[in-house]
Length: 119
Length: 110
Image 1 (tube, rainbow over the protein chains, first blue to last red):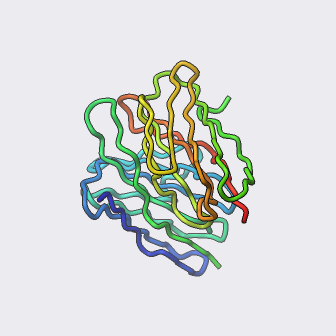
Image 2 (cartoon, rainbow over the protein chains, first blue to last red):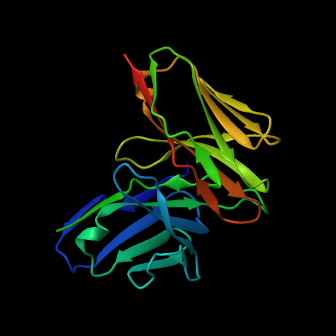
């Protein structure tokens, strides 16, 4: 159980293009989804926390107008990188979790990641 | 001081060795703890949750020490396939805040 699917797994596109990445929880309802970015040989960096039916919470330094997040259902969150530029090239990973009661968090389950290359 | 700290390594160990990593956390309100492994250019995969009483899964043993605020991961009889980066994750009571350590890199050598 606890499978998270992310699509696409690899994107190569021209500078200025907008890219949409989907994250789906396949066998559970994800009240919360997370979007991370990871540069080569660096740690995971949390970009935003996405809650179903409400606005995403962005981490400091992450432009909300640049990285649009939509969490329209309990099984789907999308990240759109608008007008992507070469510096946006990175490994983008989503994860999902279900909160079990007050104060007890389930582990996050990660999608396969999307490797984004902007030319 | 970082909220969650790990020795980045790398830990280079021969096959069959036993190796242990620690992860310290600074906030005593931390509620849940997990170990993940991440292979190069791949997503993190959940290795095991860490329970207060400690838990074991095959060659892997996780322990929690609340008094000293650290969790540990012990790997027995290391295999080449254990080579990866091991991430500890700490979450706080009543929030969706998950804090990742920067990871400890393990290389198991033939």
